[in-house]
Length: 204
Image 1 (spheres, rainbow, N blue to C red):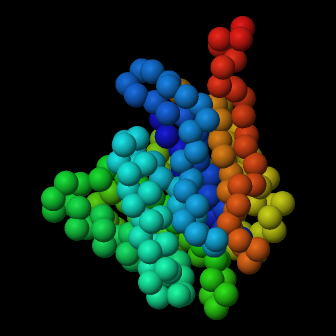
Image 2 (tube, one colour; image 1 turned 90 degrees about the horizontal axis):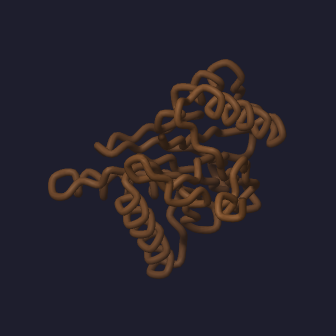
Image 3 (tube, rainbow, N blue to C red; image 1 turned 135 degrees about the horizontal axis):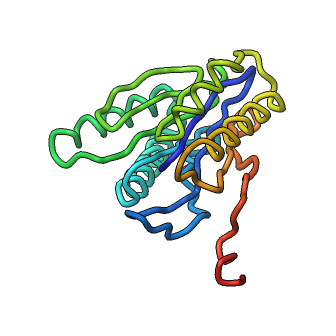
């Protein structure tokens, strides 16, 4: 029951992901960070099979770093999105990755941007996007309340509304979420929204 969503604000982009590692009917952990920092100004939120998600996001991260090491300049967010799409498209004909991605970044020339890339390698630049069962509720809330000129505080308020809606309406809702932001200052973790801490069952 994964939930990954993101939006672009006035001069920043935000990606939010649940932090549950689940297999079948079992929850293995509730603090799994599904948002990878690709470099100083890019973040990648991913949903899908745990192995595919971890392997593919790390593969993209290392290739982005390799490009910068070889050429002395970082890839733009658009170039990273197209590289990611190309790798998914290549794998689709061989051994497909079951991974859906929301890529956010900030470039000096173009500002913040958000890209939606699904497991069959379709790529779209969007202002708001979501994957997983939580997307039904997150997209509805963002359709109603989203504005392109939102401040960080307004965007976080909207993110919290989305999380509340997912928790209250999804039949098997993830309890914890991680929020990351990217702007001219760089990519960083903004906050966690936790209703369960790992180990709480053992401590009880």
